[in-house]
Length: 365
Image 1 (cartoon, rainbow, N blue to C red):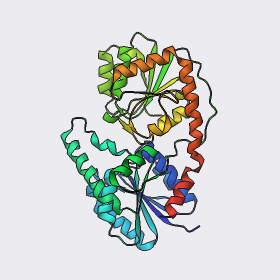
Image 2: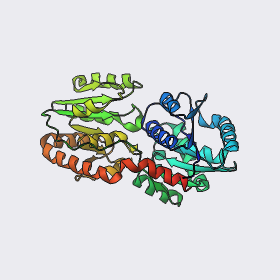
Image 3: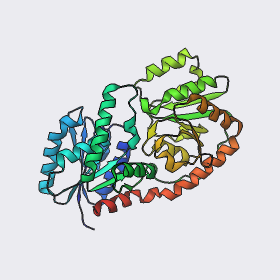
Image 4: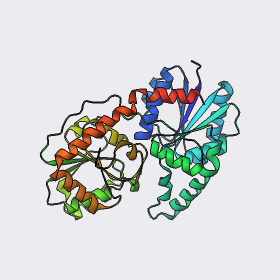
């Protein structure tokens, strides 16, 4: 097999789904004797494990990708001059656009766009005028620049379909490696309702929706286990206390080992406006949890079908979410049946072959 040089560019390489799945892929490629580099802005959370696997890391001291691009171009140019057949794999829409604009002129470099978020992300601004303008510019630039990429990949069929329709170009799908192996399905026997919610406290995750739904159900015996970062947490804690539902929530911060939290819960709730390929939902399904999810854009649509392998509620609608949680309380066996169907569908994704599929696609670029 012909060995190549891969440069991965992901601006934010802090702890999270995108950085974690990228780390797994880079390590796999390195073990296959390909030469691998990583470029990110600021601190790389996975630096130790990457360096242990002989990956060279460039941490650019910049908060904005656009201001870092001249440094990035110099780094890439130097790598390409020493290693022919180099590919740069850029992740996240704004970084993808900048990669094409700044690096397309470099010889002996192929640009692979890996789009991790659905195109509909750019329709949301949450009342932020600056974000509204920025998103409109990025969406227009995607239309103008993506055609100059050598290959475009997303991590869900729904995201690929929507992006392909928007830009009029073929888009490939390779799922994120959310799990290493499929765990045998096991029915949850917990009597009380214990909900698990995992995610950042950011606007698009819509944690507010769950707070308001639990407020509607405050007379029910419900505990919500929350695994998240501390950013913006005080704001949510203040609202929870004001609503006098603090006994319904337990906050644990981010955890590396999630198994005990999956085992101590019997329902997983996802409230996002949009998701790429939701790793936490995959892990919840793999740990036999029924799923209630917003009908969000992106990869959730590859994982569950409404009232077959999970249940959708109307996005940003606490009343509808409350009704679905109440339905779970009254019909747990039905939801266990949904969970079993979702678990069976995981086998079709073939997580054990994802990295090999990615390698083959890159080698044929």
